[in-house]
Image (tube, rainbow, N blue to C red; front, side, top):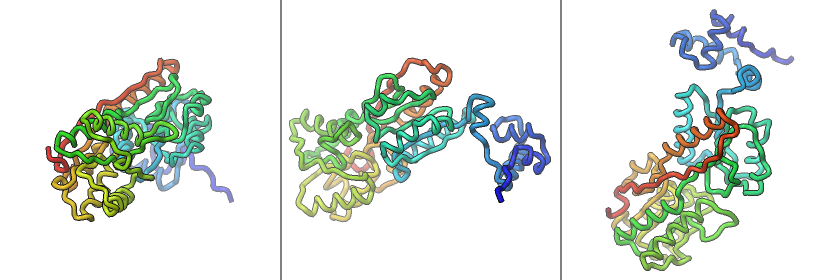
Length: 338
């Protein structure tokens, strides 16, 4: 038999409160006492009440929810990004739903479909699989802010990281600290379309060239999934094959953590034998031994700007598109000879 849908009235009756009180709790309004709020939420959970976002949109024009679509859940960077966004939305009594696209063109297109967008008041999309042509064909009515490196049509609101500038800053620091044979771990010389790894390899190469050093292709060490395990295994392999380096620019902090482990496996000391710089300034990076010198892309400002652009579009769907590019800074710790 088909189970009857639990209604807000059912929750109110079971909790011994008014329907308005249940509504205030579910909409996170502040005019409900803490004990009553907790009691109502317990009843909601016990009865299995589910908020009907479509009905909420029909009543108020809003769902109170923002969607964040990211390529992967298993990278610390996206976890920290989601946490910052969730905290910022909570201040506006809004909620965050995070989806994983797997960097798939099809799944990113699905995330921008009308049916999916109606679940949210706005969407933050880390576009990886989509290209310029895909984005040019899409004309969503709801607020969207694109995050990432891809070239996008001018009509989109976008927040982008200074990838090349950050990589250049990291490499310049390694050069200043005496490194001369500096590898770009996770970099790529070319790719079918712009991506993080190519931008950061370009910054690495530019810094070396400006210092009169040769950005040799064999010093660019590509990775597939940018995981700690892959970076560790790759560094172990290239060192065993005879590659001589005294510095590593790792394209992400997770890659740098893998490199740190691989160097330790090879009996090399950081920073005495090989100096190391990452990119992202993840929270975990300060707790390593040694602490990781890294590039801080100013995620709090990126999040604040992305949400500002969403709010602008919510207030005015014809708001002129903005392209925000973050600042970057160097955070020095024990993995370089500062």
